[in-house]
Image (cartoon, rainbow, N blue to C red):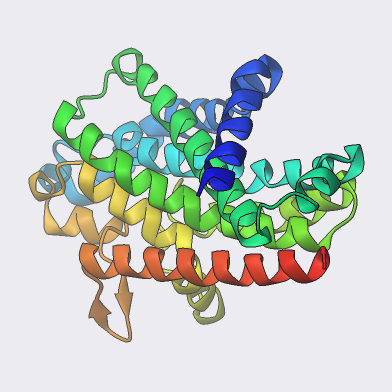
Length: 275
């Protein structure tokens, strides 16, 4: 347990000392927020009001897209935090801890907790933009969503840790992860509805853990009940699997199961890679 805490604390210390990483990680989420939130909000709201009239009253596209931007921050931070495993190998730090009494399972779990914590912190920092965007999320909903953000960050860090255990260079890691991250973002409902996708894309959407993460965050942060049923369906706020609507509880269970499975696989891969 002490080994897990030590590695966890080390990753947090590195994060707070690296200001460039802290500021740079916000560049893409803020860029997407400006493009999709600021640029498309008028278009989306006009389309909704033109198509549904009074049924679309109260719909705010920026309010809809903000939880997706936060989830995107969690995704990118959690996965890219695993790159520190490769850096530790290259600088020799990994050899030092591998010869220590700390088990390799503890190393992997410590890295996972560090990535989940860092991603959650960065997601919470984005909450500071809420007043400037004119949004009206309740304090209670923001507090309620934080534990789930940590769970989602832990689940996604397992993906990053798995690739970091198999790839030897940071350049290779960045290339492979970028190929994975972008589809996970665009096929999650973070930026636009994914309810009317072609069959083969719909399968990917339903297997994507970020899809359920974004949906849970929207349902916690947004007053979904205040929106008409038509708007909820149009904006993809009801995920169906085999014709059945998935509940928030089931979505959380899926994320939890995904976290356990991928962290376990990543841990096994980590042990084999450094055996």
